[in-house]
Every structure is written in structure tokens, then in C-alpha cells.
Length: 263
Picture 1 (cartoon, rainbow, N blue to C red):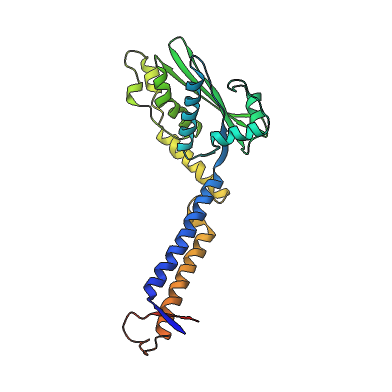
Picture 2 (picture 1 turned 60 degrees about the vertical axis):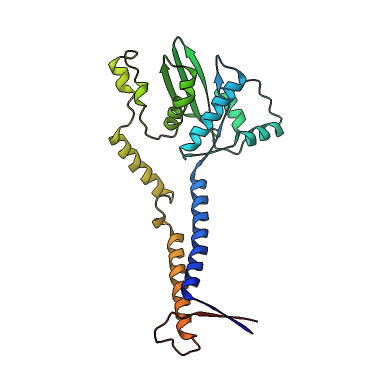
């Protein structure tokens, strides 16, 4: 029979690593489950090629994902599902009825669609968030960019639209308040960050999270179970080292060890 001696410190560290890994996996899964499942349909973009329209849609999809407020369905997976269902779509889908028809075929709760076009010298981005089950337009986002180029729509205005769709507070870049090109009122309207509104929204969000069991991990029952498990494991390891010390030094000094019998 072989006897393997393990330091109690090593045993406790090993126990912590195992529990912490499980904790991180559970936390990541919880965060992902709380995020809204959303698909982003191809944008209807005027004055550009099909390839450029696709790139703008991909950029919007990436910017919405970066807000960490939505669980975005991958474009390739979305295309594969629609192809399997035999859904034929000629061109981009902008109308609500078309977006709902697509959404019903996908494993999502809501769908985002819209258009990008130019009127005179102003580019405009229009996005809509539609609930699949009810068919109701839950939110509309409009971003206007006077005297812009398509490059500025790509960056940063798609990012602005994505953050507004996700209810994330932001400020327009200083360069976007174009001197001489806008009135003072229009230039002032570019500043979007309102601290009072932000605090109010955060309070509402905290209340919503509390109702559905979200918020801080310290309010989760499984967090305290993990803490209790770690504490119990550490006590067991240290207690075993003292009581099973074959040298009889359990009550004296020394680092001690945990003895495991291998047959």
C-alpha cells in the first residue's frame, strides 16, 4: 500500500482552483442566459453595393454585440437556418412584416432591422427592435449625420445607433459637432450623456435585476454554498493533517500533511 503525503496548503489551493473554475463557468452561463436573444437582419442600404451593405450590417451586428446587452445570433448560423427552412429573400429586409417572418424561423426572441439612406446631404440610420411573438415594434432608433460620408456612418455612427438601441449612455465625439455646419441648438443636442437620467436608469435596472434574481453575485444562494464548501474543505484538510500525523505532532508546530492511501 502506497501512502501519498500532500501538504494541506496544496490541498486547499487545489480545492479553490476547482471551485473557482466551476464558479466562473456558472457565472458566465448565468450572464449569457440573462441576455436577450436577438437576430440582426440585413440592412437596406441605398447608394451602395451589396458587398458594402453586407459589411455595414456586419459592423452593426458587432457594435450591438459589444454593448453586452444582447445575445446576437451569428450571421452564418442565421443564414444556415433560413436556408434549411427554405426561406427565400431577395434583397434586404426592412419592413416589419418581413422581419417578423424571418424572426419566427430563428431561435431568438426579437429581431433588429432597418435601413441606411441619404436625403440631400444628410445620411440617416433607422433601426427597429421588433418582438417576434407579439409583432410589436418595441423601439425605434434614428441617427442623422449631416454632411457625412459613408465612412462616418461605418464609424462611429453605427456604434452610436447600437448603443442607443441597447440603452447605453454615450457621448458623441467632439468632432461630430461640426462647427459652422450646425446651429447651436443642434450642436448642443449632440451631447447625449445625462447623469441624472443615467442614475435613474441604473436604479430601474437594479430593481429589475432584483425581481428576476439578477444583480450582484453576493445575492445568489449558490455563491454562499460555494463559500461554505471552500471553508469546509479547508477545515477538513487542516483537521486531517493534525489528527492523522503519524509522528504524533498533531498538536505541535509544523506544516503537517494530508495522507491519502492508495491501494
